[in-house]
Image 1: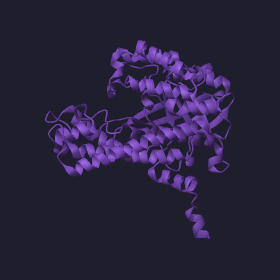
Image 2 (image 1 turned 90 degrees about the horizontal axis):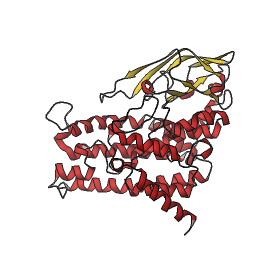
Image 3 (image 1 turned 135 degrees about the vertical axis):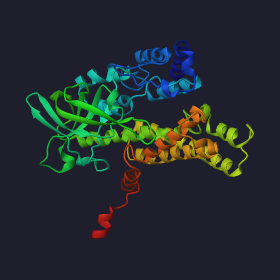
Image 4 (image 1 turned 180 degrees about the horizontal axis):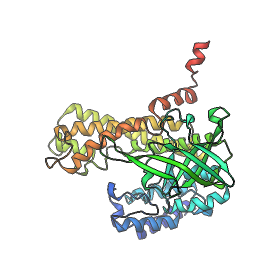
Length: 406
């Protein structure tokens, strides 16, 4: 038996013994585990599953054991993923620390910073948020004006951020700040970490048209942050920011990986099941046009999943995420929006509800999630930004200004 086969046997045995039965069922939105100091668990098994996976380091299976990760090879990680899928195991932890901060901290952080922050990310002990966009710096992120001025051993931070996801319930923030105003805008930015409980930090949730408030305005009023919390070199934060955005876009592209599944679907149905229920006889979709659209969507979703897996494997064997993340982000978000459009088409007039007892809670949730999906084209860099990146970095097309000048 090869070493990889031995690992599969041991991983399968461990999962069978340690993954609670309720963690082998489809994820319920209210039971998603974000971790953090004040984490709540509506299902006690969610806490148990997180603790066990965190101790094993398998929430971040390829991260170094030195910092609490699983220390697995790429091949072992792939086997673990297969075994988790085999038992339909839920993710033990959803975390911006895992999908965004951790990878760049491992790449740019000091040994001391990694020891301080990486283990708590792996175990889900700290919940992170991202301080990037500002009221006057969205797609043109480098125009940010939140300032950090060195005062003794601290940086004093003043300014504000907007669209800060879950800032009101997060413990720490990874933040872009301007540390030099006398140089070109990209050259005077630094990347810093600090506690959201610091004096002078405040948040205000933003209510969306869907009725949810996952985003916040975040304000910094003379917030003192130890200078040692600066990640990377002073004024070189743009390099880290771009790298992190690649990881974020790869994470957002995963919205398109659910195929025909929608976690909050009408009565927890898949897309095909909903179409059969609302537009068929329970076993067949009666509308041939809708049937064709769902079939095409299913093929596209399968192709996208295979492409994403190949891209992930290639990135881990090379220099990491690259401009391909923009391609995946763009297509994954378009695919997710198509999924919700098709669900609404399948539901017919049952998708018209907003509130009240005339509609099932699952039906009401789908309408709101359909509205929420429209933001996929904006968050993590707009669709237009992604197309620009693809044009320049993948296709090698010249800038429009260059064409005009020539």
